[in-house]
Amino acid sequence: MRKWRAITAFQKSLVTNYLYCICVALMLIFLIPNTGEGKSKDGFYIGVGVTNVSIGGDFDGDNFVSGGGSAEVFPKMEDAQGIKYILGFQSNIGGIDLSYSRSEHDGNWAGIDMTSVFKSYDIDFHILLLKTTYIVRPRLTLGAGINRLTVEDGSTDGFSVDDAIFKGAAVRLGAGLELSLHERFAIDAMAIYRWGRYNKVEGIVEGDLDDIDGNGATYSAEVKFIF
Image (cartoon, rainbow, N blue to C red; front, side, top):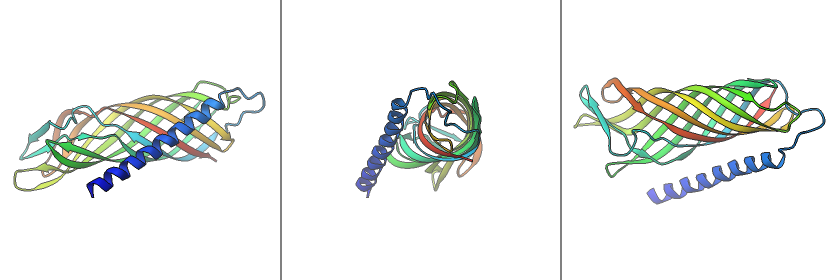
């Protein structure tokens, strides 16, 4: 079963990386100003994307925190692919969007295999650096997010185990490219780094944390429909 999961994860990684590379390649091919009317359209949009998420910081596979009667571990997690859903509004100079993303990570703590689920609820502000007469436009992103990391069987009191749910927030900074395929369709390729802290944990016992580091990067390829 473990071997099958490893093969499946590797296949997902290849698919995500290929999709991301294809999106970037398309954008580079069309990085030419369009002398006619621009393709981008102002308005609300919905989108979906694939992500590649890394989780680092204090999650190194050795550390743990204890207090209040239980101990919660910090596994070292592999990068993993996930899904992202987006709702936003854009104009010719930038935009704002709300998004939800989820990824499932294999990991290890002190020789024990563990699985973790990372969820992020984000608000991002985007600045587009070129006018709508360009088919491809670079953009900068600044945002904030609420993060939830669930480590399966990551909490114990010495007699029983339960999931450990780490809760916190993050600041997000990144850059990317937008490719306008049509006035209503666009592809985004994004690279974002988050500076995150977990300050609460819910396991066998719920309590506060002393700002556990949850930094990491997210790469995404997204398709959006503009109304």
